[in-house]
Every structure is written in structure tokens, then in C-alpha cells.
Length: 99
Image (cartoon, rainbow, N blue to C red; front, side, top):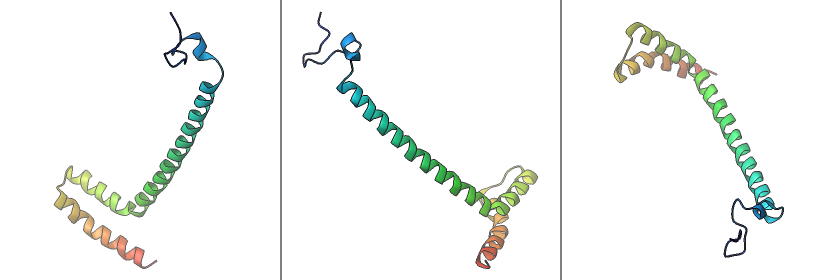
């Protein structure tokens, strides 16, 4: 039985498919592309993490106020949460416009 496909290429897993040549070049190119994609994904994740940290820091007071209310009440509707945060967000907005 032949270890080659009808096109003359080695069948996967045959000894001749492990030879050096174009298949290794393709694997090399795929590894480079994969590394570039990984690097781009890493950049996106680092930027997203920095942006999330900035958002959390900006709204830290509101988050702490919300946490205190939730600890006291154990739950809250959307209307409750909006009411609890309205004063805190107004303070933050005023502080930001004063900078």
C-alpha cells in the first residue's frame, strides 16, 4: 500500500510526511502567525485591563456607596440602585468638572 495521496503528497502519519521541506516551512509560517496573533491579543487584553482599572478607580466612590447599601438591604431593584447612586454620581460629576 502506498504512503502517498493521489496528488503525490505523503499521507499524514507516514514516515515520509515527517521529512524536512515545504511542510516544515508551512509549520514555521503558521507558528509566526500564531505568535503575532497572540501578541496582538495580549496587547488588547492589557489595554482593556488598564481601561477597566481606570473606570473602577473613577467610580470607586459610587461602587463603595452601592456596596454599603447592598450590605444593608441585601438586595435592590433597578430603581433602588439608581436612587442610591444618584447622589454619589452627582458628586463625582461635580468633582470631575471642577478639575
